[in-house]
Amino acid sequence: MANKNVTDMTVGNPTRHILKFTFPLLIGNLFQQLYNMVDSIVVGRYVSSHALAAVGACGSLNFLFFSLSSGLAVGIGVIASQYFGANDEKQLKKTIANSIYVLALSALVVTLIGVIFAGPILRLLQTPEEYIGDSIKYFRVTCAGIVGVAFYNGVAALLRSVGDSKTPLYFLILSSIINVGLDLTFVLAFDMGVVGVALATIIAQAVSAVVSMFYAYHKVSYFRLGKNDLRPDFSMIRDSYRLGAPVALQNSMIAVSCIALQAVVNGFGPDIASAYTITGRIEQLVQQPYGSLGMALTSYSGQNIGAKKQDRVITGFRKATLIVLIFSMIMLPVYFLFGKYICGIFVKDEAAEIVISLGASALRITSPFYFALGMIYVPRAVLNGCGDTGFAMINGLTEVVCRIVFSNILTRIPFFGYWGIWITTGLTWGFTAIVCVMRYRSGKWKYKALER
Image 1 (cartoon, helix red, strand yellow):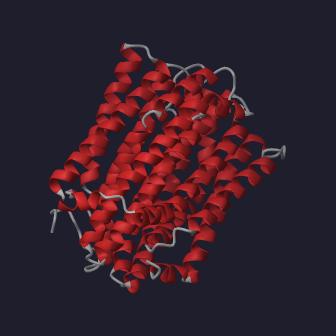
Image 2: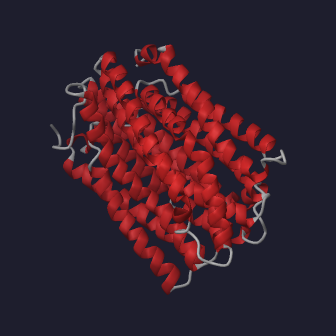
C-alpha cells in the first residue's frame, strides 16, 4: 500500500466500509460548513441583519461558481477510483497529473467571470439596494479564492478515490480554525465587515489547498509524478471533462435554480431574505450527512465497478438507503421542537424576533422532506461512481424546473405567500428524489460502467 489510510473497498463488509469512510467525510464537511455558519453568525450578530442578507444574497452564486470546480473534481475522482479498483497504477498517476491542468484552467476562468461581472449579476437578481454594495464586495473577494477551493477539492477527491477519507479531514479542521480566528479578527478588531468575513474564508481555503498538496506529494506514492506522467494527455483531459462537466453543470443548474428562488425571496424584503439565509445555512448543515454518505458511496461504487463487482454496488445502495432513513427520522423532531432556538443563534438586533419566528416556522415546512433530500444523494452517488455522470444533467434540470415553476406559482397564491418559498424547497427535493431513484432502478449505470 502507498499509504496506511488507503483502503481497498472491493473486499470486506460493504456497510463497514461505507460507514468507516463516511464518518471522516461527515466531520470534514461539518467543519467546512463552519465557514458559512461562522460567516453568518459573525455578520448577523456583530454587523447587522442587513449585512447577513447581503452575504445570503451571494449564497447561490457562490455555490454556482464553486460547483464548477468541485464538479470537475468529482469526475477526476471517478476516473481515479476506477483505475485504483482495476489496480492500474500507471493510469491512476496520469489521472492525477492531468487533473492539475483541468483544475487550474477551470478555476482561472471562473474567477475572472466572478470578479468582473459581480455587479451586473447581483443586480440581475434584484438584490435590494440596501445591501447590494456589501453583496458585490463579498462576492468578488470569495471569487478570488476559487483556485484554493478547486485544488483542495481536487486533491481531496483523488485521496478519496484510493480510499483515504481521513486525511482531507485534518486539513479542513485546520482551515476551519484559521477561518474562525480570522473572522473574529477582521470583523471585531479591524471592523472590516463582510469583506473581512470573505477574506478570512479565502485565506483558510488557500491554506487547506497548499497543505493538502504538500501532504499528498510526500506521503502518497501515487502523487509522486515523473516527467512522463506530467505530459498532458488530451484523452485523459477529455475524459475528466466528459465525466466531470455533467456533474459541474448539474451543480450549476441547481445553483441557477437557487438563484432564481433567491430572486423571488429578495422580492419579499430583508426579513424574509434573512430568514431564508438562516434556514439555508441550517439545511446545509443537515445535508452534510447525506453529502458525506454520497461521497463515500461514489468512491465505493467506483472502486467496485472498476473491479467488476456490480453486486457489491447494489448492496451498498441498499445499506446507504437505510442509513438515510434512520438519520431523517432522527432529525425531524429536532427541527420541529428546537427550530426557534437554532435560528436564534444567527441574529441579534431589532429584527431578530421576526426573523427567528419566520425561520422556525420554515423549518417545520421543510424537515418532513429530509428523507427525500437524502434519496437524491444516494442514487446520484452510485451513478456518478459507476461513470453514469451524464444523468447529472437530467438531475440538475429537474431541480431547475421544480424551483422555478413551484416558486413562481406558490408564492403568488395568497394562502401561501412567502411560505411558498419553503414549500418549493420541499417539493423540489421530493420530485428530484423520484427521478434519481428511477434512473438507478433502470439499471443503465451497469452499462455505463462498461464504457471505460
